[in-house]
Length: 85
Image (cartoon, rainbow, N blue to C red; front, side, top):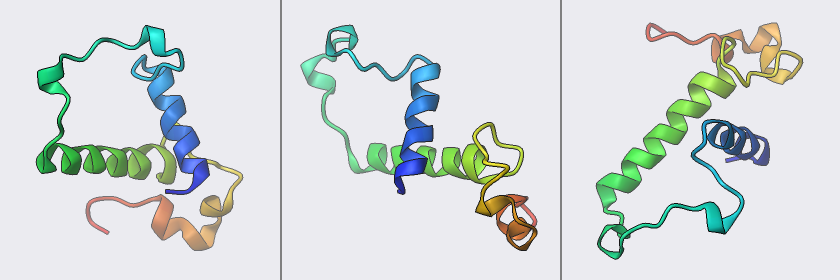
């Protein structure tokens, strides 16, 4: 993942209240719940990919850069995707 995309993911998480920079503000996680299985990791990756596709790469996404390279007409097939294409 490129640094620019990480920034937007972190901003989204911070604004939604799921990301905290102060370790003392972190909720406590019970010891029994601290292991991630393969399925959990797959779901996390799918969520991140979905966020990037819908909110950063898609033209109507909240974090789409309308002045960036993806906004050029030649990249319309990338930034204006639907289920059909």
